[in-house]
Image (cartoon, rainbow over all chains, first blue to last red; front, side, top):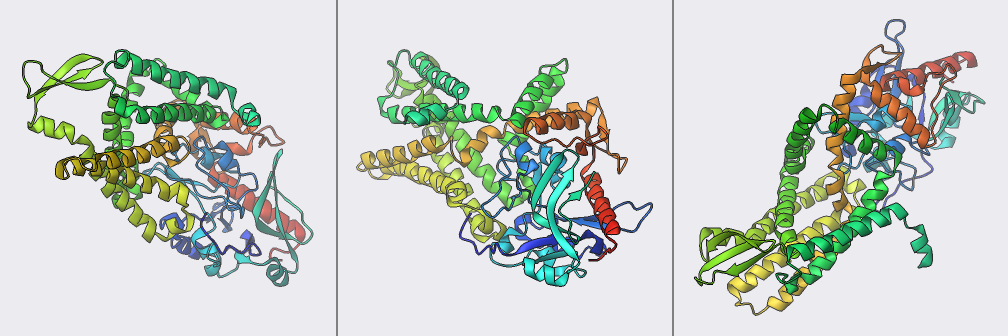
Length: 189
Length: 351
């Protein structure tokens, strides 16, 4: 990667219970230049028949990304800051392995372009010391980008967690999810 | 040095050596024991043999990765099945559409497609012209009965004749000039993208993205220099032009297996991925337990369970199902539900 001003003190914190489903993040995400003006964030109802709860999902930037591991074309890479980048467009063969293997359901396949795309934490912005687009517009701070001290001050009754359990598999990530104070992990199944 | 040799992949090394030796064999066969070989091209031949060795080595290592191996195996299994004719026809169509015309780039950007198409077409025609010449498969002779008739020989056999100074001769002898023009225009268009697109500026690298374009332009410009020299300078600078062009081409050949140009060979896997998708859909779709919608072929999901296990991941759940049985939306909802439950049990939804 070229010279960057990526600030490793800054972290991403997600609290989907705070998501009000306004879609501001989705609009803002499309402004990110590394996505080619495609919105990469996922926002949808969790179970529309029984609740109005919405959820928001950015790429969690796993320590050992399943998407990159299952890619047959070596198109997905993780950089020295822990950012897992969207597929290298010259290599991606549009097979959808990453779309189906990601435990968080993040990568998207652009069918026409036969290309996988995903959130890369607004690398055009974060590498210049700015905040990701989605986090700058989220009105309820379901998406927050800042330092650990800042989030602790704002959410004294919560703990950021970056360990997730999917059955037998434990996944550690760069992005945090805000959990009840004292939590160490989030067990999904 | 010994440590380096020890770390080499044995299977890949054997395959690469066989591929490189095969090139030497076809050079001997095509040039009739080198009697028709143009010695001026020997540097290019050494570069090509190295490139073949490197590409075969990397390709072989690449195929050993579990997901690539799976696609490779499945693609051939589906292609060579009882449905060979429809799959071969489909692959052929896709070869023209996606490999020769790179139409999948068009939805990514019109100008991007035009730029890529120009430089790829220039490169592919140039390969088609130069490889048979470098291998000694094609050589030209003068008709003994006429000093204006040229004969093109393939593997030592005459295949066509044309008059010197004819349009055919002009087109044939300037084929690489047209290629250089196409490549230069295409490469400049791609460079402009890389100078103006904010996303590319943030993520591009010199060796990964700029060097290939610089090399292509260097090859094209130095190649045009040879034509310029014999057309306008009576060949006065031929040696300089020939040497500097050879240096750029040989650098390109040596670097081919390591850098961005390897995607030319990887791209063919897209044909296999397409057959895999079609055959998978035919065999039956997987339904997400959360959304109750079909989202991928069951074959793909089952294969991914095996591949992820090979790679050290185990998404098996306590009830025997797998997290991979869920669609992307189902996975996101499962995470949201688990988060809701944790917050609920914690006593505060907004901590």
